[in-house]
Image 1 (cartoon, rainbow, N blue to C red):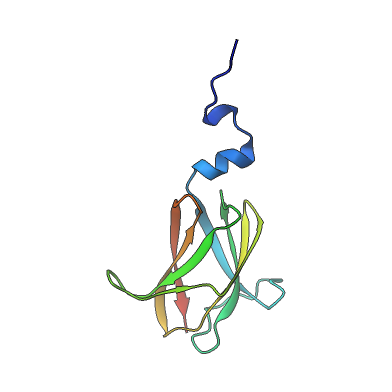
Image 2 (tube, rainbow, N blue to C red):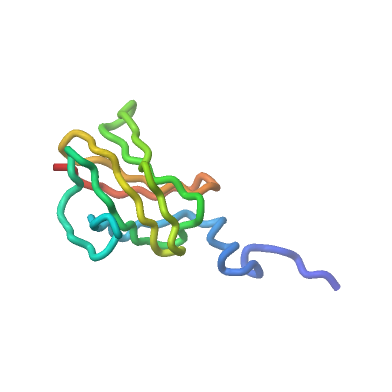
Length: 118
């Protein structure tokens, strides 16, 4: 008798490869990514951030987009995968204002949240 391989009999780590990530919080940190110091992303210097969520996977990209359709995108210059709930990243400087931060898993599934630069 054979077992049909499907989502439910995959290991939890493999299941996350088939799910979209979620972002529950983004915290500004120091260069060690501890402790959260809060506040906005530095428009002048950029900032270290800790991204908290679910179904984050190794190899995920962190992207910041300015404006709406046709807006500019900037990749985080450093992305460190900690586990399925945490990614550390350095966000580059940008103009002041609200931006959209995306986490894009290697499978293309994406989550977004609004961050502020000042």
